[in-house]
Length: 260
Image (cartoon, helix red, strand yellow):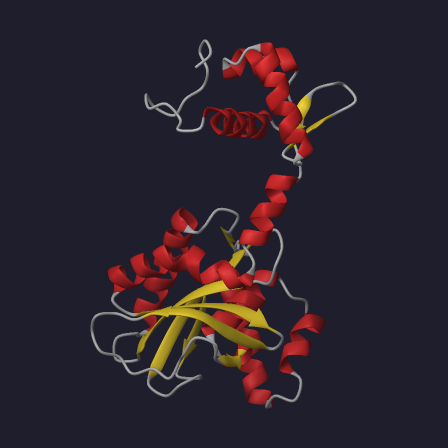
């Protein structure tokens, strides 16, 4: 170890060169767009000048660092690209699984994860409670955005205009269109969408949408029988779902803001 070289706790890194590189990546991320001069990197990292320079060159080679015209080092574009790849749809169930499990354990109701697929919602994952519950849903199934809390939440979270809303309601019955538009408007104000026995008889649902820098909208919902999901409980669960997702959604995801 060199001087006051940065370490995580008292345990030495099993691979010192890798640890140096990762420490500098974190350092540049904290520095922001203005970056750092080499002398500042040396001082903050505890590496000697030659070691810091070699490591920064290696990071530049792989796109994890870049050097501006002012000779200051800043974070490169590679980390953001890796995050984008990891957050692709096929990884969403893995990313959200701990959060879904925690929500299900707390409320003891069925929890779904979904994304927009055209005018439909695609179920990506579901976590079932300990108590028995019969709901016709499965991972990979697609259902209309018009009658689901997941779909309504995602459309509301997008801030769709009237013209964009019309793209979802083409060929739908007027009564369905009216309910959908009203539900989306309410979801924008509340921050969560509700659905009462419109998608499946005897079943009610509340959903919250999440945003991310790139990719399709994502939403999480809580589903239960109407006997346990009256208006007051749906409202409480909606607020609680926003709180949990705000605190524990995977990095890069944020709860869609309200319009109120």
